[in-house]
Length: 91
Image (cartoon, rainbow, N blue to C red; front, side):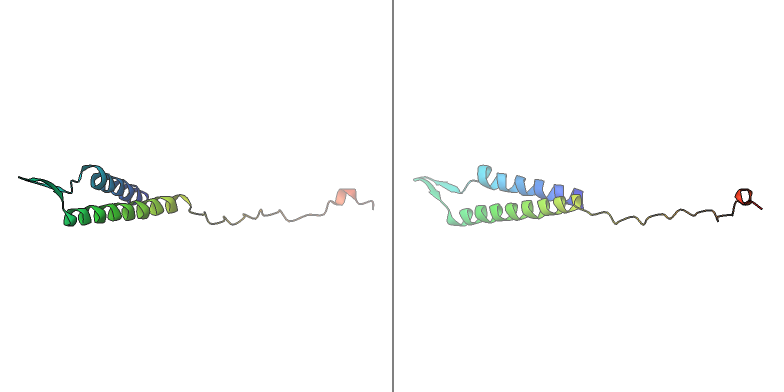
């Protein structure tokens, strides 16, 4: 579960980084460049998906570190049966 969490939050960071810094939302024509709304929508969806992957991965990673160990039962020591010491009796 820990490995899955780490891989999910790394994938979320990678996807959000790609969408924010590499993904181009402009189209170049002979008269200039324009911003394409469809490409902007795809960029936003990639950012949202990257954020969701990051949050889920961080939660999975964090929950594997907070496992509470079950209390161990106390071991009872057996006592030897007591024997009376007859040497201390004055007869």
